[in-house]
Length: 404
Image 1 (tube, one colour):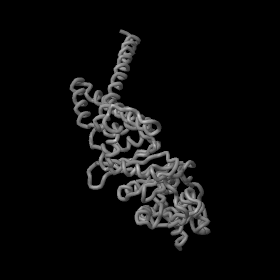
Image 2: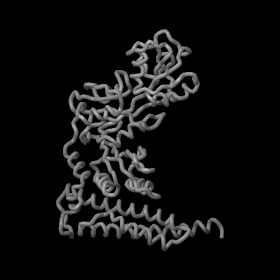
Image 3: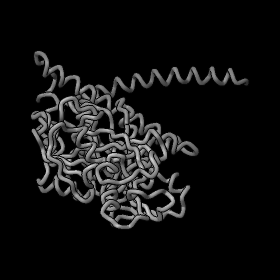
Image 4: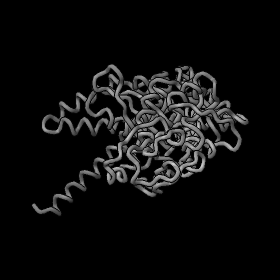
């Protein structure tokens, strides 16, 4: 038998599979109606696991793994269809005359009565759209001239800036009420995620309101009258050192020293009497602290930028919010991450960020941080988040925010 004949056989089987898939989805919608009438949850993990074990036995070797993966995706598609059916009815009920339903209670009232912490939190926040405070107090790490300070200027036309020593101090200022908002870096286009911030996110409770991107150009700054050949030590934040690794690699005799902030490093050099030290910082800091630019634009990439988050203590959802942040812990088992990602795929949601950080005092267990493009006011998105809360441990809603 030739290749073309094999392909024709596959085409015939695919046609049958499509028809069977359509039949299965028709039944899934009937199941959704039944669950509605009897106030049943859409997600039944015990039932899913029983089905997966059954199809694995039916498939037998060597296709047990493949059939489990296939049916896992199929069940995620089925759950998503049920949520869409429910959401469509809720929308019709809200926008027009109430429909006659073959049920004893209002559609999906069971879910609305659950009052799980995340459902209550989101419903309350959506009822009260956020309004940015006038002339707010905003905390950022470093001193004047820091890239975080530039992010503050981008986010607010009028504000009172509070400069603190490090990123943890920003979280503490927001948590204590010392500041209305905080600005923290989350990732750089060259050096990647700011892992120390992700570790702090496990420690503090906060919500994201906005993000913004700041172009980052690093200069080597030294004392007046100095030159590059005089420099023996350089100071900067660890991200600044990483973003200028190629330049530093070309000058191996220069000792690298991590500092709390790029602008603070510039101020430290300016305040020192040592003419052999320099800072990796911004051109703005050269003017602010009376330093010379010994070498301009030493970052690895000319397209270098850092994304900053604006955080608040209370959940506030700005108008036009177009991204959502979540954190959760996955089961420590094969395929758990794939299954989570499938939930977003079947909902047509674009996942823009995925980061994992180890959990303290737990061997090889991780918390996953996700950002994705979605509107919380969309019923499907709302129900997806609520279902993830029920299905995963240590779930945190990090905000519905406005992204540049």
